[in-house]
Length: 224
Image (cartoon, rainbow, N blue to C red):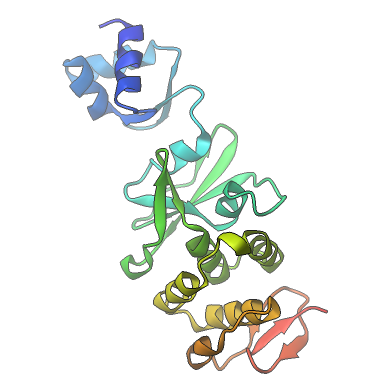
């Protein structure tokens, strides 16, 4: 098989990111032959052992297809939905198993292991597995993303957010400090959050490093 025919076959299968086994099935030759064949194709880039992608593939498509299942979340997901002005230089991937950090086209890729009970709320958007808007916000509040970005994102996405789903996801994460932060953010935005009150932590949750003002209703410390 010629290189151009192989690339054409990948395109037909919508495989911008693929494994050595995928290539073996297409070419019909032993894996050692296929590995050598791939190394001679300029359009094929080697990510890690047994993992490849086509040159020009969006780094987030590569990052979300390294570990299966997994999805992109946290600040990069907020940027994906164009709800913050910051352009992240790293990509956070939520997965059911740990994986070493990677570099994909100049982006640092960090993998965060989730319990299965927290692994939900993501979509497949053109071969990019990414948190839904609601799950991205919840994940950010659990894993300590800068509250300024979360609040900015919430305001900018508010018209597209399903508040009921947001609360449902929050409760399912089983993280009381996150409930404190979310309830505070919802009420500051003029939305009702009374149904979250029973799930609060008794401890105060800090919203930023310089937070010092107490909100006794939601038990958070925030900056002026």
